[in-house]
Amino acid sequence: DPYANEPKRHPALVVRSKQPYNAETPVDVLATSPTTPSELFYVRNHLPVPHVDPATWMVRVEGEGMKRVELSLKDLTTNFKKHTVTSTLQCTGNRRDMFNDVKKVKGLEWGVGAIGTAEFAGARLSDVLAYAGLDADNLGDVEHIQFEGLDSDVSGTCYGASIPAMKAVSRADDVILAYEMNGRELPLDHGFPVRIVAPGITGARSVKWLSRIIASPEESGSHWQQKDYKTFSPSVDWDSVDWDSAPAIQETNVQSAICDPKPGDVLEGPLEEIEVRGYAYSGGGQAVIRVDVSIDGGDTWTTAELEPIQKRRYRAWAWTLWHAVVPLPEGRAEGPVQIICKAVDSACNTQPEDASGIWNLRGVLNNAWHKVGISIQ
Ligand code: MTE
Ligand code: MO
Image (tube, rainbow, N blue to C red; front, top):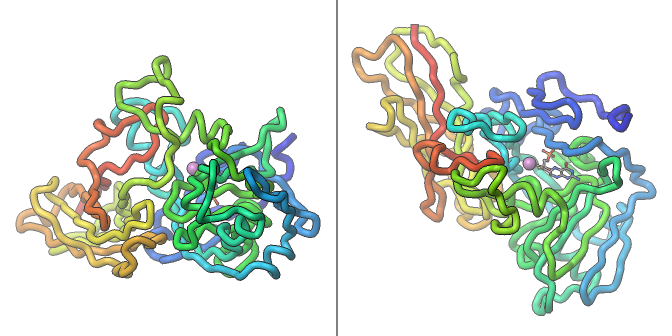
C-alpha cells in the first residue's frame, strides 16, 4: 500500500480526498491569522507522501551550459545565504466548488480554503543556478527552469513543473529552495526536507520534496504542466480540448473571499451593521489596493479596511486580510442577507461578477465575486 506511511494530520483540516490526501484550511483560521499555522495549512498532494532521509537527500542541478551540481541539505544551509519570504500559496483549483453551479467540472471540490500564507526560508534559486554556472545575463536557449519531486506513481513517474527562467534567475522574484516554513523545518506534507516556493505563481509550480532542477529550452513535460492547470473557453469540453493550444498557468488573477460570516450563519438581530472579514490576493506580486463589500446585490459597496496596506506594488507576495463594517439599510434588520466581495489589484484588475464567462472544464482560477448567504433573526 503506497499510502501506508502517510503523516499524521491535524483533525481540523477539511478533508477533500484521503488518497492522495487533500485538505483545506478551516475558514475561521484563514481570515484571522496573517500567516497560516503550518499544521493547518492546506495540503494538495497528487501522490503518496515520500519519506526522505535529510542526511542523504541531495538536489541535482543541471542543464544547458551548466555544470552538473549535487547539493546536500548542509550545502544549502551553509553555502548559500538564507533568504526569508512571506508568501501566499494558492491552489489553481481554489473555489472550484462554485463552478459546479454553472456546469459540472472535474476535480477536487475546493471551497475558499485551498490557500494559505507562510513565512518560508531557504536558499535563493537565483544563487543556486548561478553557482551551477547559469549566467543570468545571458540565458542562451534556456527558457524554463524545471523541477522534479520525489513523489511518484506506480510507474515511477514523478511530480514535476516548471517556471519561466526569467523568474527563476531574478533576485527580485524571490524564488527559493525552502527548508523552513514558519520558522521550523518543513512538515512532511509540505515537502520535507526541501521544496520550491515560487511567490506570485500558482501553487502547482512550487514543487515539494525537490529532487532535481533542470535548466532547459522546454517546459516541464509533466502531466501537470502539459495536461492540467490550463484554462480554456467555457465552450471547450473534454471531447474538444486541445491541451497544447493553451499556455501553462503561472501568475494568477486577483482573488478575494469572505471567511466570516460563513454560509448559513444566523446572526442575532436586530442589527444595524454586519462585520465581514476575508482575504484578498493577486498573482505576479501585484498588491491588493481595494476590497469592496455589498449586501444589496452590488447596488452599493462599502470599502473594506486592508490589513496591512501593501506598499510594495510589485513584490506583494502575501495576501491582504480585510474587514468591513457594512451598515444594514432600515427595514432590513431581519431575514436573509447575501454578502458579496470583490477585490482590485495594483494593475487595476478586478473580479468578474459571475462564474459563467470564466467557467473552464478543469475548474481552475475561479475568481468570480464571492457570495455568502446568511440570515438575521
Ligand atoms: N509538489 C509535489 N512534489 N507533488 C505535488 O503533488 N502539488 C502542487 C504543489 N507542489 C504537488 C507539489 C500543488 S497543485 C499545490 S497547490 C502545492 O504544491 C500545494 O502545496 P501545499 O500542499 O504545501 O499547500
Ligand atoms: Mo494546486
